[in-house]
Amino acid sequence: MLQHALFIALALLTLSEAADLNLSGEKFDYFLLAQSCPQTSCWDLTENWQNSGSSCTSCNKLSDSWTIHGLWTNRYNGNHPFNCDDETRFRPNSVNEALKHEMSLKWRTYKSGFTNQRFWSYEWKKHGTCAAEVPETNSIKKYVSKALNLLDTYNMKTLLQKANIQPGGSYEYNTVFNAFRNVLGVEGRLGCAKNPKNGEQYLFEAYICLDKSFRPINCVSYAGLPGCKHNKKVVYPIALKSCH
Image (cartoon, rainbow, N blue to C red; front, side, top):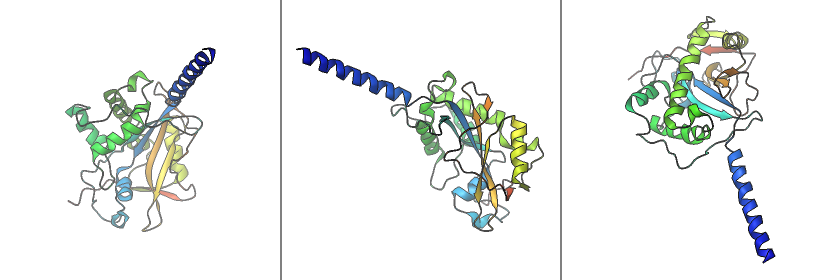
């Protein structure tokens, strides 16, 4: 009888520890807002760099402003929680039509064979489901709305324009990075993509770290994020009109 009671107690303790481990797996330290430079993303994610010298682009309705790649939950130790809730799925009716239209303009995919709906579902499942501990992001609608709001507040095109970094130019890496840091007030990260056609590096993505109150903070970990070669110039391309 005593052995049976001890077994039950140990089993309950194990279950309790497992629950705690599961909860700890969803904890995070800060948000990371990842933005995409539209024209570079189009060339890189469609593997269409051969058209980088063209006067038009293969991507439809390319935004002339930066768009959202994702709003991610990160930890200071360099890793991040992911796929925290398999039950709450991003479905076509998860957000209203007005919000969906705004997403189609500001949070679009550039990857060949990927639809916006599939992209949103992927980002929500991997990252959005892990943001529930923060009230402003604890539902699909809130998470999406907050990401769109952050893009409007910290859009890279606007931030760089304040430092006279304009699309269509080629700049020293440090010129772009320092402008980004000075305007933002904290240190973020820039990501570049190499054009195999001419060997130049193009401004591809930008990463801004934010605390759980959505205030910019210095990024302390760049694990898994693309970077730029500091000794090469950075091309900042103009968003071209569609060839179609």
